[in-house]
Amino acid sequence: MTIANPAREELHRLLDHIPESDVPTARKFLRSLLDPVEVALLNALSDDELETEEERAAVEAALADPAADVPFEQIQHLRK
Image (cartoon, one colour):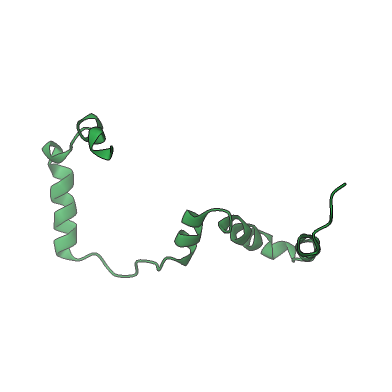
């Protein structure tokens, strides 16, 4: 026999009364309680700064130089 948990029962009742338009938000919030990474993403500030010319040039230089890539096999031993 399972003993009822009043807090869970209340949550079930509340979920049944959430307007359909708010279900995706409620689902997202409840899932975030299970995953600390998702909580961090939900709470992260958006990057609202424009990319500077210096940043743009650095990205272009990095993408243009394939020699800078290091194969994973060469660095995976560093994880130990």
